[in-house]
Amino acid sequence: MAVATDPLGCMQKLVQMLQAPPYVAAAVLGGVLLLMFFIGDWRKRRRSPLPPVPAIPGIPVLGNLLQLKEKKPHKTFAQWSETYGPIYSIKAGASTVIVLNSSDLAKEAMVTRYSSISSRKLSKALTILTADKCMVAMSDYNDFHKLVKRYILANVLGANAQKRLRQRRDTMIDNISRELLLACVKDSSSESVNFRKIFESELFGLALKETFGRDMESLYVDGLGTTLLREDLFRTLVIDPMEGAIEVDWRDFFPYLRWIPNKGVEDRIRKMDFRRGVTMKSLVEEKKKRIAAGEDLNCYAEFLLSEAKSLTEEQISMLLWEIIIETSDTTLVVTEWAMYELAQNPKRQERLYQHIQSVCGSAKITEENLSQLPYLTAVFHETLRKYSPVSIVPLRYAHEDTQLGGYFIPAGSEVAVNIFACNMDKKQWESPEEWKPERFLDESYDPMDLYKTMAFGGGKRVCAGAPKAMLIACTTLGRLVQEFTWKLREGEEDKVDTFGLTARKLQPLHIVAKPRIN
Image (cartoon, rainbow, N blue to C red; front, side, top):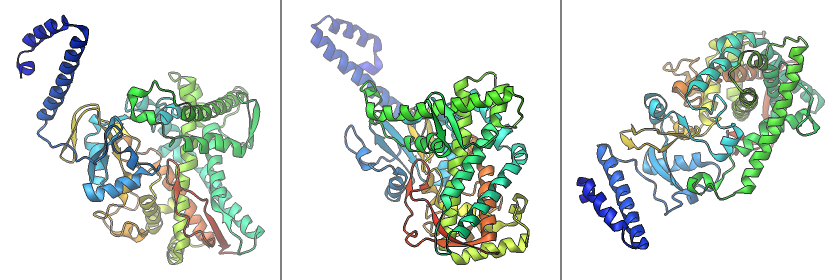
């Protein structure tokens, strides 16, 4: 108690002790510091009348790391929530992580308590691959974030930008329909078609057009001294970074040991980052040459290069890359899984066809029809619910003491919002493991409300690309249902595993498609 009530007397005694032999002084000083640490921790706990968050039992030093061996912690977190409740804490080495597994808690963290939990906590891999948060999705909520979000909304993702870029989306969907038809004609009726290969290629082309003004079949990359073909560009800009983003560096869990080298993981990530960086540099340089030649291609790069004077070249490169990776991957995830589920459910596929026919007749479906097609949007939202493209929101940390769910959250805690668990919560969703679009036809749901599930996040950090994702996915699905029937390739039913940072299907979807109209 003397330490707590008489600091001056304690300091005098400490000075006297320090005149003793060094080893005695060191022991005493260490003991005092340890005591002060516990007293400080005790005082902080006493300041809050709220209880601490329930903790998952772990082991010393490692905490719960050995219970999280696979790269799909969202499923483990969801299982734990059945035993420990929707909010609990885990120890990941030196870090305390508060895991949220219900929509109410997720909304509280992302909306109500946002001012206290707004900063991103990135792994070593993501820090490298995002150039230390130089992206809209990964940046902290600061002046940089507000500036670049205005840029991306004005030029790519906002309502006016969507209208301006409409023709490119229409052309992409025409190409997908034509490619699938050609594949059906080329192969016999029993042969399967790799749907992902068609859709992925067209999405990548759309991303390049929106970003740099045109698609391309190859690019000479000066930093690599070679020409990358289109498939190599896709791997360098999309596939490799997505795989690298989930690389685990054990030093992330023990920050005080960062000085110890971990060359294997870090070298792999830096190699990916280098290839991505020099490829983006070549794309930007090629765009600069076309601008100098007087070409007007109405693209995001043209705006950033001419108007974003306060940004560095690296920041511009990262913002351009963000459009490419997000257009090329997350929209693919929800559309591919919707195709898979419709193939498994021929009655629902036929119901969707009749639904579209009742509105569009013989005319091709357009984006303007979506508000009249509640069953189509229900298919989209149900797929988002079951196969949320991002299973866990990138970690945030509390930069001040706060509360969640009636529990005390001390400053420094990391917060993980488990979107997968929110969307599979049996208290909110009836038979959540079942894919049932009809659940969203209830009158309590607005057909055009994009935030029925937590898939797009919420609050000030809600996904800016949500409207674009819905337009592309719903119009593509509607058009393909109008023009084809399809079923799964034999053996495809069991291929439901996922891979990567998003819920990307581990195996590409293969379908046996048949044109409805000859």
